[in-house]
Image (cartoon, rainbow, N blue to C red; front, top):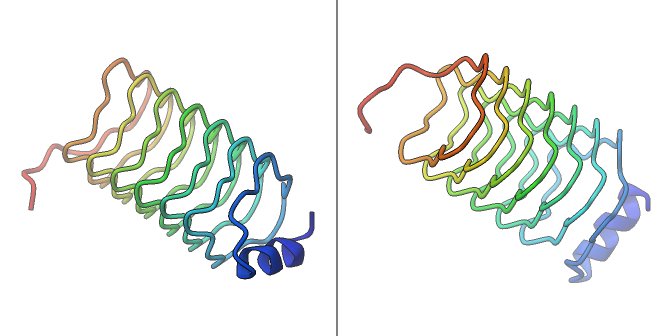
Length: 154
């Protein structure tokens, strides 16, 4: 599928794009709120400043993707592969990242308030200046991760 086709189908009301392949595509500033992208291949895609709020990205491949400044408010990313992804300044408030692979990902300055990171792999990830207030890290792998300083909630 081409990006143009995706946008046309989304504009016409379609929301189910399971297992779509758009690896290495330029999807900067795209608005796909509430889309079903379960199992999608978005490896290396440019999703900078994209709005993926309330999307299902479970089991999606986002390895090496650029999600800087993206909005993933309450998105579902269970088991998603975000290895080496750029998630700098991304809004993941309330996102579900259960068993997600975030190894070597850059989550600096991101909003992870109330995010579910249970059993996630954050090995070598960078979380400097990230807001992790209320986030769940039970069973998460944090080997070599750069964690934020603990601050009082604002």
